[in-house]
Image (cartoon, rainbow, N blue to C red; front, side):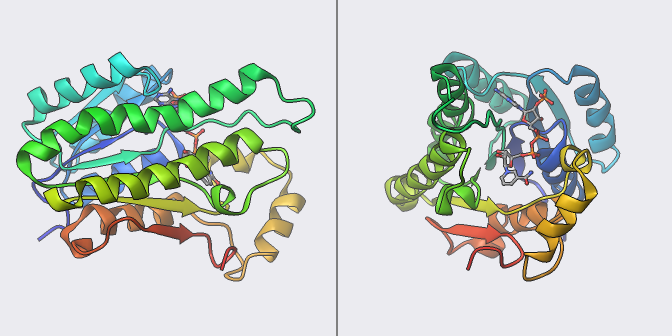
Length: 248
Ligand code: NAP
């Protein structure tokens, strides 16, 4: 029996990187997958075919998670299309790095809106079907910098710290209805984005990690399978660091 057989999952921001890795792993584990993206239309359409090859139902949505009304419509469409919504992975995120001295109001607002408000939007809408069915697993992708901070990322680390507070509050509010809420804090995960960086710099990052390597999208996806599945039935309100021991 596959770990997510018969469950329906929404993964936001899944056209590439970590979100794509989660969507693929979820399909492999038998989940029906709804996923979103903001601009990668071609990749999104191609991905539906790749997901369906695992024998599950898949649908991609061009949908801005940071827009309250759009997020509400997204959840309504998913419930109408798939019948249920069992797992939500809030993964969509952006960076607009700058030292505080140079950070514009726009850079602050954009990152808080896309990274943090999106989580409120999606969970606010998704709690309705989850409350009805009296079950659900919410997984919010934070970051180790939401725990320890990072120079040049006041906006990003504030958004990721905000996600942790939100996750814990939702766990307290919805626990009695069998709805779980957890966060994942990835460390340095190697994606297409990081492959464009200077190899020497990347190697020095790897050397500073106790497990001596960057993480893979699969490392994060495996933890999402655990938190989405019944294997974690007694786990809620937690932050799981997936960082090779970078933050202990
Ligand atoms: P990525 O490769 O840049 O992918 C971001 C995804 O989010 C894309 O699919 C993008 O869609 C989508 N997206 C952006 N804005 C959106 C919006 N408003 N609505 C819906 N979708 C939106 O990012 P990543 O590196 O995989 O990171 C994924 C998550 O993990 C983020 O929350 C990030 O903060 C977190 N994280 C990453 C690392 C790391 O080392 N990579 C470490 C810690 C935490 P389009 O393709 O259409 O633009």
